[in-house]
Image (cartoon, rainbow, N blue to C red; front, side):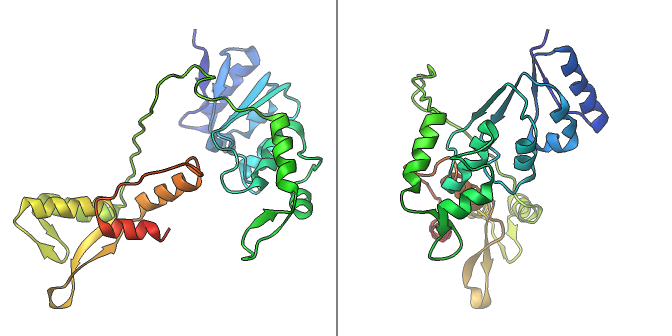
Length: 260
């Protein structure tokens, strides 16, 4: 028989029907995402043998899913958490994660006590930085509770990994793209040359439209920032503190990324 069940369905009723199988111990594993927990919060009422959180998505103490996990699953005998970079934004992100495992972190049962006593506002006033000596204590506490598994430890010998990310254009950008592709025209320009058209299409894929202003001056304006948001998420998240090479087709894309 199957070894796991996806807790999903077209309706809340269907999801609850899948969840009801847990009482009989079949199948062995149930998979659900954060949005699914909102649909069937009854998942917390099941007497689970083990709960595993993937990617440490409870770093932010203010989110619904963090509050939900910190409130429930406390009687589950086995709790584990898997993540790449556990604290991409701040050492403050350690508290919710370890507190979910142990009920507290560094002796603090409440996040706000942890922040108030161990951190202070930065010079800009927009972020929090550890007080002197706190970062060393955090490192010691994390090392005592967590462990790092390298690719070699996991038996993964593949030297490189290629991942393709697909980002959907906005409907407005897609409409302009389709016009250029099918009719060789933009809202302010037309051409009969395929090479010019393909240049426009490449720039639209980066989020920029070529426009003709007064006296025929050509310029570019951003109409979609999806790629730049994804780049920022990568550089501040899973690729934080990593050496990264970013290739651009056009200089205006590079200049826009430099402003992130």
